[in-house]
Figure 1 (cartoon, helix red, strand yellow):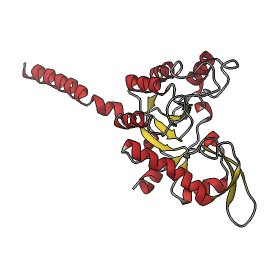
Figure 2 (figure 1 turned 90 degrees about the vertical axis):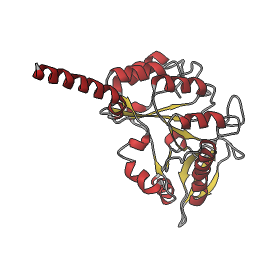
Figure 3 (figure 1 turned 180 degrees about the horizontal axis):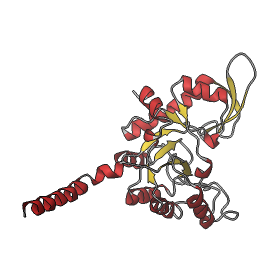
Figure 4 (figure 1 turned 120 degrees about the vertical axis):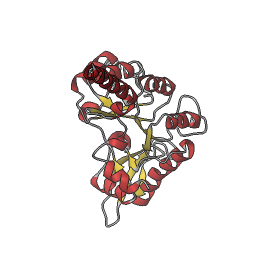
Amino acid sequence: MQAARTKILAILFIAIYSISTGAIGQIVCNKPVYLTLDTGHMEVAPLIAEVLKRQDVRVTFFAANERTKTGDGSLGHDWAPWWKARAAEGHAFASHTFDHVYWRTDLPGDHVRFRMRPSAGAMEGQASTWTAAQYCKQIDQATHRLQEITGEKPLPLFRAPGGKTSPKLLAAAKACGYAHVGWSPAGFLGDELSSEMVSNAVLLSKALTNIQSGDILLAHLGIWSRKDPWAPAVLEPLIVGLKAKGFCFQTLRAHPAYTAWIAAHNK
Protein backbone atom coordinates (compact mmCIF):
# COMPACT_ATOMS: atom_id res chain seq x y z
CA MET A 1 0.00 0.00 0.00
CA GLN A 2 2.79 2.37 0.97
CA ALA A 3 4.65 1.58 -2.25
CA ALA A 4 1.55 2.29 -4.31
CA ARG A 5 1.00 5.58 -2.50
CA THR A 6 4.64 6.56 -3.07
CA LYS A 7 4.29 5.77 -6.77
CA ILE A 8 1.14 7.89 -7.05
CA LEU A 9 2.85 10.79 -5.27
CA ALA A 10 5.82 10.49 -7.59
CA ILE A 11 3.57 10.62 -10.64
CA LEU A 12 1.77 13.66 -9.27
CA PHE A 13 5.08 15.37 -8.54
CA ILE A 14 6.30 14.77 -12.09
CA ALA A 15 3.03 16.13 -13.49
CA ILE A 16 3.16 19.25 -11.32
CA TYR A 17 6.84 19.75 -12.09
CA SER A 18 6.20 19.45 -15.82
CA ILE A 19 3.47 22.08 -15.68
CA SER A 20 5.46 24.45 -13.49
CA THR A 21 8.51 24.21 -15.71
CA GLY A 22 6.63 24.45 -18.97
CA ALA A 23 8.24 27.80 -19.67
CA ILE A 24 11.67 26.24 -19.25
CA GLY A 25 10.72 23.51 -21.67
CA GLN A 26 9.79 26.13 -24.21
CA ILE A 27 13.21 27.75 -23.88
CA VAL A 28 14.92 24.50 -24.94
CA CYS A 29 15.01 24.91 -28.70
CA ASN A 30 16.39 21.93 -30.61
CA LYS A 31 15.45 23.06 -34.13
CA PRO A 32 15.84 26.84 -34.05
CA VAL A 33 15.13 29.25 -36.87
CA TYR A 34 15.81 32.95 -36.67
CA LEU A 35 13.14 35.17 -38.20
CA THR A 36 14.42 38.65 -39.04
CA LEU A 37 12.31 41.54 -40.28
CA ASP A 38 13.72 44.58 -42.06
CA THR A 39 11.88 47.88 -42.14
CA GLY A 40 9.68 48.80 -45.10
CA HIS A 41 6.67 51.02 -45.72
CA MET A 42 5.26 49.83 -42.34
CA GLU A 43 1.61 49.58 -43.43
CA VAL A 44 1.56 45.90 -42.42
CA ALA A 45 3.64 46.39 -39.27
CA PRO A 46 0.65 46.42 -36.85
CA LEU A 47 -0.70 43.22 -38.41
CA ILE A 48 2.70 41.56 -38.21
CA ALA A 49 2.95 42.53 -34.55
CA GLU A 50 -0.44 40.92 -33.88
CA VAL A 51 0.68 37.66 -35.51
CA LEU A 52 3.95 37.56 -33.57
CA LYS A 53 2.15 38.18 -30.30
CA ARG A 54 -0.57 35.62 -31.02
CA GLN A 55 2.01 32.99 -31.98
CA ASP A 56 4.35 33.91 -29.09
CA VAL A 57 7.29 34.37 -31.47
CA ARG A 58 10.26 36.67 -30.95
CA VAL A 59 12.15 38.06 -33.92
CA THR A 60 15.07 40.36 -34.66
CA PHE A 61 14.20 43.64 -36.35
CA PHE A 62 16.75 45.43 -38.56
CA ALA A 63 15.70 49.06 -38.71
CA ALA A 64 16.38 52.00 -40.99
CA ASN A 65 14.47 55.28 -41.18
CA GLU A 66 12.71 54.44 -44.43
CA ARG A 67 9.86 56.27 -46.12
CA THR A 68 6.50 55.02 -44.84
CA LYS A 69 2.93 55.06 -46.13
CA THR A 70 1.84 56.88 -42.96
CA GLY A 71 3.93 58.83 -40.51
CA ASP A 72 7.32 60.47 -40.61
CA GLY A 73 9.61 57.55 -41.42
CA SER A 74 9.96 54.09 -39.93
CA LEU A 75 12.15 55.37 -37.08
CA GLY A 76 10.33 58.67 -36.76
CA HIS A 77 8.22 60.06 -33.95
CA ASP A 78 4.98 58.54 -35.26
CA TRP A 79 6.29 54.96 -35.20
CA ALA A 80 8.20 55.25 -31.90
CA PRO A 81 5.33 53.76 -29.80
CA TRP A 82 5.20 50.75 -32.11
CA TRP A 83 8.89 50.04 -31.57
CA LYS A 84 8.63 50.53 -27.83
CA ALA A 85 5.79 47.99 -27.67
CA ARG A 86 7.91 45.44 -29.54
CA ALA A 87 10.74 45.93 -27.04
CA ALA A 88 8.31 45.23 -24.19
CA GLU A 89 7.42 41.94 -25.91
CA GLY A 90 11.03 40.78 -25.90
CA HIS A 91 12.06 41.24 -29.52
CA ALA A 92 15.63 42.12 -30.51
CA PHE A 93 16.80 45.06 -32.61
CA ALA A 94 19.77 45.97 -34.81
CA SER A 95 20.82 48.55 -37.37
CA HIS A 96 19.91 48.52 -41.06
CA THR A 97 21.82 51.84 -41.57
CA PHE A 98 19.80 54.95 -40.79
CA ASP A 99 19.24 56.11 -44.38
CA HIS A 100 19.04 52.58 -45.82
CA VAL A 101 22.37 52.99 -47.59
CA TYR A 102 23.31 50.64 -50.43
CA TRP A 103 26.93 49.73 -51.07
CA ARG A 104 27.74 50.07 -54.78
CA THR A 105 31.48 49.40 -55.02
CA ASP A 106 34.83 49.78 -53.30
CA LEU A 107 36.99 52.61 -54.62
CA PRO A 108 40.69 52.20 -55.41
CA GLY A 109 43.42 53.92 -53.45
CA ASP A 110 45.31 53.77 -50.18
CA HIS A 111 42.33 55.00 -48.13
CA VAL A 112 39.22 52.89 -47.58
CA ARG A 113 36.39 54.50 -49.51
CA PHE A 114 33.13 53.27 -50.99
CA ARG A 115 30.58 54.35 -53.54
CA MET A 116 27.27 54.42 -51.66
CA ARG A 117 23.64 55.29 -52.45
CA PRO A 118 21.04 55.97 -49.74
CA SER A 119 17.42 55.10 -50.54
CA ALA A 120 16.09 57.40 -47.78
CA GLY A 121 16.99 60.67 -46.14
CA ALA A 122 18.34 63.91 -47.58
CA MET A 123 20.63 62.11 -50.07
CA GLU A 124 17.97 59.63 -51.27
CA GLY A 125 18.88 58.19 -54.66
CA GLN A 126 22.19 60.05 -54.91
CA ALA A 127 25.42 58.07 -55.26
CA SER A 128 28.49 59.55 -53.60
CA THR A 129 31.86 58.65 -52.10
CA TRP A 130 31.93 57.64 -48.42
CA THR A 131 34.71 56.94 -45.97
CA ALA A 132 34.62 54.04 -43.53
CA ALA A 133 33.92 56.54 -40.75
CA GLN A 134 30.87 57.88 -42.60
CA TYR A 135 29.49 54.38 -43.03
CA CYS A 136 30.03 53.58 -39.37
CA LYS A 137 28.17 56.77 -38.47
CA GLN A 138 25.18 55.51 -40.49
CA ILE A 139 25.14 52.20 -38.64
CA ASP A 140 25.52 54.00 -35.30
CA GLN A 141 22.71 56.45 -36.06
CA ALA A 142 20.13 53.71 -36.48
CA THR A 143 21.43 51.91 -33.39
CA HIS A 144 21.21 55.05 -31.27
CA ARG A 145 17.73 55.88 -32.54
CA LEU A 146 16.50 52.37 -31.74
CA GLN A 147 17.85 52.63 -28.21
CA GLU A 148 16.26 56.05 -27.80
CA ILE A 149 12.77 54.91 -28.77
CA THR A 150 12.79 51.39 -27.29
CA GLY A 151 14.78 51.92 -24.12
CA GLU A 152 16.68 48.73 -25.01
CA LYS A 153 20.27 48.39 -26.18
CA PRO A 154 20.28 47.03 -29.75
CA LEU A 155 22.51 44.15 -30.72
CA PRO A 156 25.99 45.01 -32.08
CA LEU A 157 24.90 43.66 -35.45
CA PHE A 158 23.80 45.22 -38.71
CA ARG A 159 22.37 44.24 -42.06
CA ALA A 160 23.47 46.06 -45.17
CA PRO A 161 20.48 46.96 -47.39
CA GLY A 162 20.03 44.36 -50.06
CA GLY A 163 22.74 42.33 -48.35
CA LYS A 164 25.21 44.17 -50.59
CA THR A 165 28.67 44.23 -49.05
CA SER A 166 32.36 43.75 -49.74
CA PRO A 167 35.16 42.39 -47.55
CA LYS A 168 36.39 45.95 -47.04
CA LEU A 169 32.94 47.16 -46.01
CA LEU A 170 32.51 44.31 -43.54
CA ALA A 171 35.97 44.97 -42.10
CA ALA A 172 35.13 48.66 -41.67
CA ALA A 173 31.90 47.79 -39.85
CA LYS A 174 33.65 45.29 -37.58
CA ALA A 175 36.27 47.90 -36.72
CA CYS A 176 33.50 50.09 -35.31
CA GLY A 177 31.84 47.23 -33.44
CA TYR A 178 29.29 45.67 -35.80
CA ALA A 179 29.08 42.18 -37.29
CA HIS A 180 27.04 41.71 -40.45
CA VAL A 181 24.02 39.42 -40.64
CA GLY A 182 22.78 38.12 -43.97
CA TRP A 183 20.24 35.34 -44.43
CA SER A 184 20.16 31.68 -45.40
CA PRO A 185 19.40 30.71 -49.00
CA ALA A 186 16.17 28.99 -47.93
CA GLY A 187 15.51 31.86 -45.55
CA PHE A 188 14.84 34.34 -48.34
CA LEU A 189 11.07 34.34 -47.95
CA GLY A 190 10.40 36.14 -51.23
CA ASP A 191 8.31 39.09 -50.09
CA GLU A 192 10.36 41.36 -52.39
CA LEU A 193 9.40 39.36 -55.48
CA SER A 194 6.58 40.33 -57.82
CA SER A 195 3.27 38.82 -56.71
CA GLU A 196 2.30 38.53 -60.38
CA MET A 197 5.27 36.23 -60.91
CA VAL A 198 5.37 34.39 -57.56
CA SER A 199 2.19 33.96 -55.53
CA ASN A 200 1.96 33.89 -51.76
CA ALA A 201 0.92 30.22 -51.93
CA VAL A 202 4.08 29.33 -53.85
CA LEU A 203 6.27 31.28 -51.41
CA LEU A 204 4.67 29.56 -48.42
CA SER A 205 5.04 26.09 -49.91
CA LYS A 206 8.67 26.71 -50.85
CA ALA A 207 9.56 27.99 -47.38
CA LEU A 208 7.89 25.12 -45.56
CA THR A 209 9.68 22.64 -47.83
CA ASN A 210 13.18 24.11 -47.76
CA ILE A 211 13.79 25.80 -44.40
CA GLN A 212 16.23 23.91 -42.18
CA SER A 213 17.24 24.17 -38.54
CA GLY A 214 19.62 27.09 -37.98
CA ASP A 215 18.37 29.13 -40.93
CA ILE A 216 18.13 32.91 -40.72
CA LEU A 217 14.86 34.00 -42.34
CA LEU A 218 14.30 37.37 -44.03
CA ALA A 219 11.12 39.36 -44.63
CA HIS A 220 10.12 43.02 -44.43
CA LEU A 221 7.64 45.34 -42.74
CA GLY A 222 6.07 46.13 -46.09
CA ILE A 223 7.33 46.09 -49.68
CA TRP A 224 6.22 48.92 -51.96
CA SER A 225 6.37 46.95 -55.22
CA ARG A 226 4.49 43.78 -54.19
CA LYS A 227 0.80 44.19 -54.97
CA ASP A 228 -0.39 41.16 -52.98
CA PRO A 229 1.33 41.69 -49.61
CA TRP A 230 3.31 38.76 -48.21
CA ALA A 231 2.52 39.72 -44.64
CA PRO A 232 0.49 38.82 -42.76
CA ALA A 233 -1.04 36.43 -45.32
CA VAL A 234 2.00 34.11 -45.41
CA LEU A 235 3.55 34.95 -42.06
CA GLU A 236 1.11 33.20 -39.75
CA PRO A 237 0.70 30.00 -41.83
CA LEU A 238 4.49 29.88 -42.11
CA ILE A 239 4.97 30.14 -38.34
CA VAL A 240 2.26 27.56 -37.67
CA GLY A 241 3.66 25.21 -40.31
CA LEU A 242 7.23 25.46 -39.04
CA LYS A 243 6.08 24.85 -35.47
CA ALA A 244 4.20 21.77 -36.65
CA LYS A 245 7.47 20.47 -38.13
CA GLY A 246 9.21 20.89 -34.77
CA PHE A 247 10.93 24.20 -35.41
CA CYS A 248 11.15 26.93 -32.79
CA PHE A 249 11.89 30.63 -33.09
CA GLN A 250 14.73 32.53 -31.47
CA THR A 251 16.23 35.99 -31.85
CA LEU A 252 19.80 36.45 -33.03
CA ARG A 253 20.83 36.85 -29.40
CA ALA A 254 20.91 33.03 -29.35
CA HIS A 255 22.49 32.39 -32.76
CA PRO A 256 25.75 30.45 -32.25
CA ALA A 257 27.52 32.48 -34.94
CA TYR A 258 26.93 35.72 -33.02
CA THR A 259 26.71 34.92 -29.30
CA ALA A 260 30.43 35.44 -28.64
CA TRP A 261 30.48 38.67 -30.66
CA ILE A 262 27.41 40.00 -28.84
CA ALA A 263 28.88 39.12 -25.46
CA ALA A 264 32.12 40.91 -26.32
CA HIS A 265 30.60 44.05 -27.87
CA ASN A 266 27.20 44.59 -26.26
CA LYS A 267 28.47 46.28 -23.09
